[in-house]
Amino acid sequence: MSITNNGMVLGATPVAADGPEWVAEPTAYDAILLAGFGGPEGQEDVIPFLRNVTRGRGIPEERLEEVAHHYRHFGGVSPINEHNRELKAALEAELARREIDLPVLWGNRNWEPYIPDAIREANERGFTKLIAIATSAYSSYSSCRQYREDFAMGLESTGLEGTVQIDKVRQFFDHPGFVQPFIDGVRDALVKARAEIDGLDLGSEVQVLFSTHSIPSTDAAKSGPESRGFDADGAYAAQHRAVAEVVMAAAEAALELDSETSVPWQLVFQSRSGPPSMPWLEPDINDAIHALAGGPTKAVVIVPLGFVSDHMEVMWDLDNEALESCEDEGFWAVRTPTPGIDPNYVTGLVDLVLERRDGVPVGDRPHVTDLGPWYDVCRPGCCENVRLGFKPAAAGVAP
Image (cartoon, rainbow, N blue to C red; front, side):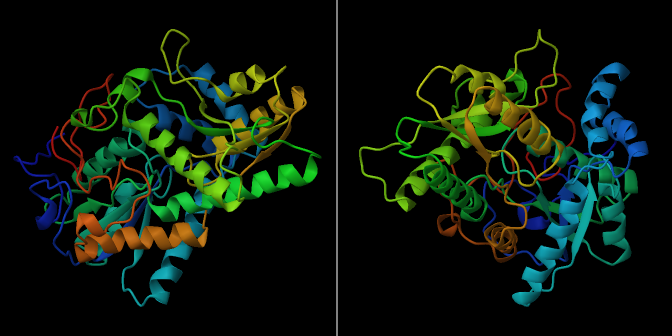
């Protein structure tokens, strides 16, 4: 790739170009770039989509066919594109309600409409300063840096580097707008469990499983900047654990549990796709469910903490496989909602855009864990792809 940044943040607006941790100067953005993962919308799309997702990883066709079965079960249609259409409309409505003139453009990493399509549209409409929202809340290669690499590739492939500039809102794992839907979901699930299971002891007979996508252990270790001193599972696991603690404390407070009652919970992982020889984050959610058998657990609450919306890995891995594991063990079980277009979430995303538009000081930015607020401009070396190394990436300090 020919694109370079000459010591500055690649593709950034002037106030972000020298790489501050938090941008404290206002920026007159022209539009919002909603960046999604993308998904197939018909049976004929499934294999080409999976090839896009796995490009460069050497995944054999037979493995793609195994994963394709999940999509084919639902007619070859992932709900993720429709969700992003709904989220785009919800953002537009919230912006209109607040009388904020910022059009929303939508581009995906792995399926139509692609990120370069959105960048071309921006240029055609005269938009030169974009603020991006990636539909992923946490820090890792696949949930942050890969989006930033795609922004850089999009600028390069369209020939619009130096013309269109792209900043990105901070990772929003601990923004209250993202966290509140999970608090509501866990609270409602515990109320439902207690109503449907006579004499249920929330302090010993319930297990709350906070589930997120597993990633290779080597990638986890590189998530977040090294200077933060995270353990071997990196910022990725630390952020999830910190948010889970906040969710549980708030849900327990809402239920007015006595100070001696603490609902058991754990962080679990799902959707592993690597070879058995490669360590990935564990435990797998199904293994965790089966490990509860024979103990005091009667009810399991599954919380899709790593996901912003329902998509294939929520519908298949949780609603199908994990709930089936619960049924096999005789557990009462429920899966809580993803944020989707919850008003708290939509409002929070707009607030994140306004942080950058208005240059809100870091001390005035809402966050519910001690890890945040996260950085506006990703730090040097953050979220390296260990297998492929560093590629040019927008919205972060090189490498």
